[in-house]
Length: 350
Image (cartoon, rainbow, N blue to C red):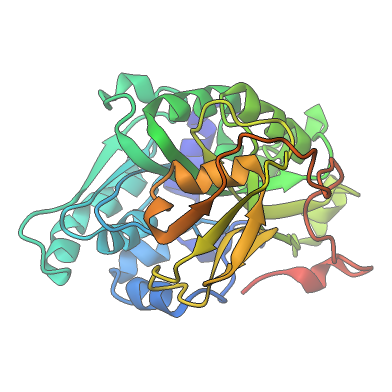
């Protein structure tokens, strides 16, 4: 599907979230209280043009510089604008003029609402495959987010490569998107409705992992996922047995991560100092770390915590000098929780 067709879909056809024909581009109501509080202060027009599929608000954001790919009307940008504080910065990129017009219209509103002396958000029109054309400084972002946009890109590998170059060492891409349990047939990828609904552009999950690793993101980490109910009989007939999932991944820019979870006798102790997670910290779907507990980790996890913005909140045990073999549990089966059951329509959101 060409850029122009996506721009038409999100700039002209869709005038609000209610115009979507499926439940793929929606975010569940269940979200942390602090996020709900931030969203409650965002301008209603911005909220009405939201088409995301997940929650892209990681931890430890104060003072961070963040890039939002496919920012649309700016909902996530303005939420993060509040969370990074006046000395942080959020940059949004989108190719759709109509969406950016909504975002830009409310810069002053949010600056005043947050009590900032000057805006800490900026919006650029451009393509996420061509970030190098926007004058963004290489290795200048702590975090890159995206909410249900990568699936719309015709060159996903290029997007990931560009993101890798813009992240600081130890920075991360933290994003939600739609994935499929198999490769999408070519005849479906040319269907403009399926593409615009974030379905036929979805990557097969294992192809995504391969693309991420080739772009330099070793050991992608799945944070959370849920099966998607399409909720439209005509579209379900087209997609047939293909199962779709909304999933959030975090990709760290850390050189030399290993392809598997290797045991070097290392451990971490979470200090409980992240305000939103005082009792424990969730790095990803398989790592919940209780505060104050000595928690054994593989070499990759140790480095993700030690070499990122998360480091001040942990104590680190071990120097990685001795290898004890591999941690169990590494595999290549479907990583998502599959609770479709017999009635897929019961697994939607909102």
